[in-house]
Length: 137
Ligand SMILES: [Zn+2]
Image (cartoon, rainbow, N blue to C red; front, side, top):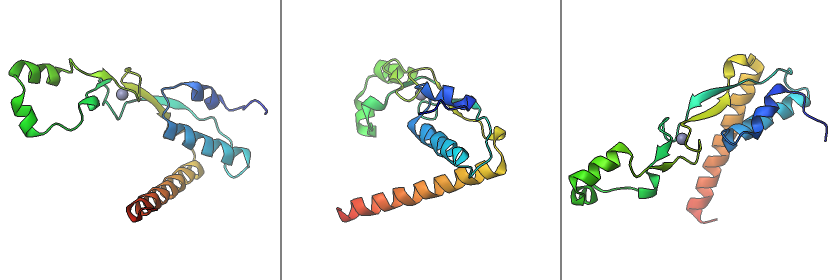
């Protein structure tokens, strides 16, 4: 396989790029290689992690806490929970609080159209998947 000649490919090895961004990047790369899109360098930028909102930790392992359960906690425990004392490192950003995303300001309109179509198809596929799951397929 030939070595990709787009600068952006080097960032793809980073684990701080989500699988969704990686798939989108590969979709753009493929379209550029096939000549469907003009070739450009894809630039990555840092963004606040959408999962932990930049804190680097999550309390997701607690699951959903009902108000009844919350009422049973001591004040100290509730304060510690609110401070994030029990947080585990966010798996999405590996605890850094930031992730890399494609900088859309470096893209041309054709690339933005490609991304919009990519997300539209992904939404359709997700809706079909949910519908099939509801039908028990
Ligand atoms: Zn995070």
